[in-house]
Image 1: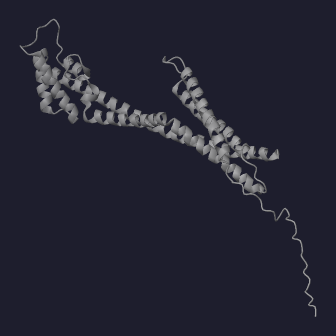
Image 2: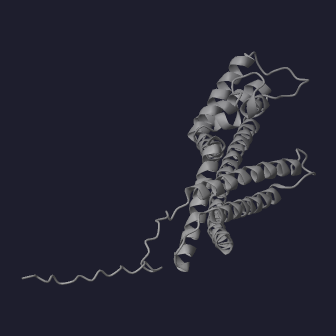
Image 3: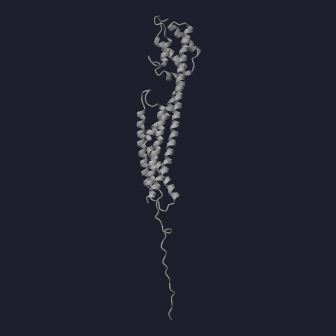
Length: 310
């Protein structure tokens, strides 16, 4: 008896279609294109910054009636900074988008996002590179602005607490300072007349300098010091007591006014330094923000051009 085996039917597997075919995985980030765009952007930034520096120095002049004024130079520097950021970032972003690999089967929205990200990352790398290259110069500028404010504040404090140091750097010297000049002026008399008594001019002026200097540090001259100093002036010059006291009061008022003027100038310098630092930081933020936007937008243009040739 012969057994009959059931027959088998072998069916051929269907050929893979476009939807079922496994696509090779392609990285979504083209670092080569990003670094190429960043290098181009950083190089162009340095070139434009050097050019702007040269143009700025050529527009300046040590003479007050020549060259551009500080306001014009400041506006020009801000405009050039923004222009540099936009131009360099635009070139870098476009190259980052144009040089990236072809993304097969990627949705248009995803491709647009990736190109935008490529431009932004290229801008970030270029910005960090320029900041690293110019770290010493940028640090000097920032420290210089802070130092200006600190020096101005220090000068203001010193002028208030020790007005003698701010007004008379050469106190005690034979030829120095506003205080020395004022003390000498106290003892001026008629050149044709002899002194009223035998006095030691060096010791007399030294004592008067100490009295006036101590009064300036304390913020006022006591009545006892005023009367004693007026007596010294009267003895040395032959003036009446009333005239000597008036001379002392006038000299002290002049010195006090000078210290007040020094304080006002110090406050103005500190305020100017603060405003300049604030404006510089704000405009730097605007320039960097504009650069980031232009780089991202330019990368999308470069990416579309890249896809259009395939």
